Image (tube, rainbow, N blue to C red; front, side, top):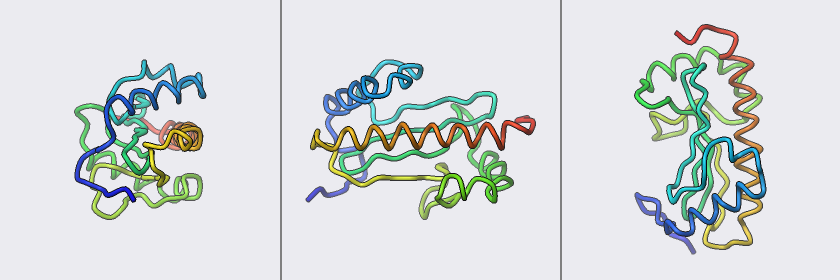
Length: 147
């Protein structure tokens, strides 16, 4: 059984190998940069003032919406709240998860990331979910001024 800690307990070499695996499996992910030994990759949408974050931990992978570097979470939360009636049916998660103040529409898949047999499923979840999020954001927030 995997126990959760306050930090990402997945070893950096495993994280980097997983991102390499994901990029090989979903070539479009290469647009967001080379595989690095960090737990998160950002799909920046600067024209919308946000990004879609894909993350891996020891016992999960997750996709959520966050601010771009230096952005204010409260401002993004307000914008997303304006569109939540349209976004919730598409993203299939609530605007906020309990205990998270700067991550929005967080969707997660629980699985042991130390087991490489889980990596195809994790990569597919991250890719398909992130693409759905990006499309939904462009179709909603994209129609308004991001100023």
